[in-house]
Image 1 (spheres, chains in turn blue, red):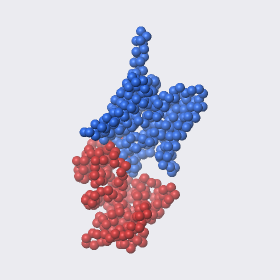
Image 2: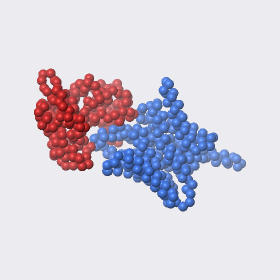
Image 3: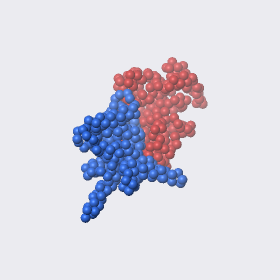
Image 4: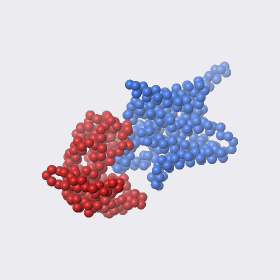
Length: 270
Length: 249
């Protein structure tokens, strides 16, 4: 009887983990394709690390760190866009500053927090096996928003990514669109942090895209292939992490790299 | 002649550095203005002001007609690998403030396809930009610029990175297009000017307008435009001037 309950329990968290991987690969497939094709990987890395500031604040205030990280990440991503327009500084330097500034704030607030922060490692390295129902709901909400936005406005997103100046010359409010899109990037990063962690989330947004690019150069197909390969690698990594008893985030990324390497080699041979 | 656009004592600057001073220019219907001048003299800045990409510090920009400008930007390598097809590039030319979030209608698609046929790039419809030659790319971008039937077409050095054969083709197309719209052409290729353009605007912080397509070397020198000499005769030819100003850039 106890064995049976234990099986169900295992089943439940494993099912949760699989749901989490599916939802993560959909959102990362969509947003990853956007950032890769808009040369925004570095800014995404900056937002990712800056969000650690929000996580630290969350620990300190005793609220869900994902919520505070989401607010922090959205504000800092909009901040980068805004400041780089207003003062004379290259975006790259600004991102570099924000990157370490966010980490520093996080470290300071964590050290202010009495006691040891037991979940801290989860946010840094991710753990798909501890994903809660609340996390899944957040992910589901994010996915619904992303699918609607990219379904309705894909042409605009492609056009603005391809040639923003041209759209500006057509009097399109590109700034406003950019703010909306960067906020979605920030939300996607933060909501997926639980799965792979701050250190590794950028690979969820870039490696499936690199694999997809082996097969297609059509924007819509790139999104779809990124999701498919993201999912395959995700499940493969999840199984490997279960049997080899290694952290899920790292094993998923490992399987991405292996898939990428193999497919790239096959493609080269053909 | 119908006025399309007027620039009245426009001043423009980046940060503190003044690029354009007291610019006055009127663009009439079916004009063909060649914009010449040294590098860093403000040619591209002038176009940015007209396109609304840069707000002038002072002065007025007056559109006498509903604003509809076609724009062919300078060649940009950054976009080389973007997953966008020729058809999509052309369709993006139909974007406007009014229809930005609307679906592209069948009628608009048909129009874009017809234009691509006319330009001879219909068979490239589904090719992505990275697979095109320089000339093909330029044709795709030209289609994008004119698919919305603009009253003014602005081209920023359309000849960079394209071969000689295409240049000729391009100028013939522009001649044809000029029957339908006014054209502003930034160019370094001064030799070609007398054969297609009607007037010349020489931009070097100030703007000096020549209501003719014939200016001599002495005039160019006095306006501080170190460009190639435009010589005119029965056979179009040019004489190379010193490249003093261009080396500074």
